[in-house]
Length: 209
Image 1 (tube, one colour):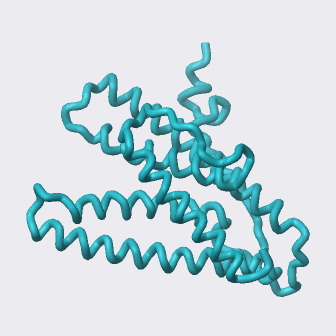
Image 2 (image 1 turned 180 degrees about the vertical axis):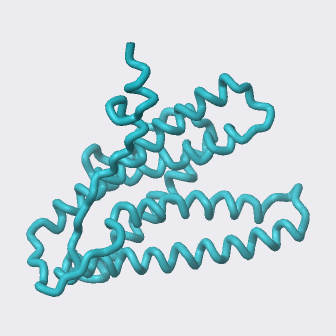
């Protein structure tokens, strides 16, 4: 990864995989659907696919749990499923960052290199969510049962989302290019979600018999 073009090609690949994954999810539109990863195991493409699949499922779990008629017991089970999904999402982001750290491990960092506010994978995480926002906003634009006013408002929002994805894609490409050239360096802090850890969540460790 030694040129801006190569970095942008990788970002374009991310967007293409995310768009394809969102489309694939909506073939069944089922949060319990099981779909094999269409990319070779151990590749960055497979990690990106799994990341966006988790995001797509969670997007729809968040819709379901907001049903005002949902059974409280079912809602609690769903909330815990969303918590597990958030942990899986974090794990995938860290897996993608591990890929980039390996990719750039031999780069000679310049003396005046600077640190970015977020790692490449967390920026790519935002691209994954944008793919879902764009798909569902486009769905609203194309609704035949909605008013013209609703569709016009949603089209304006869709235009902003598309511009946001273009800008974010460019920024990620520039970040990867800067890291490859040694102008920036990666420093990854592993997420420490205390509420998921029975040794740090006082509700969990306080209830031990």
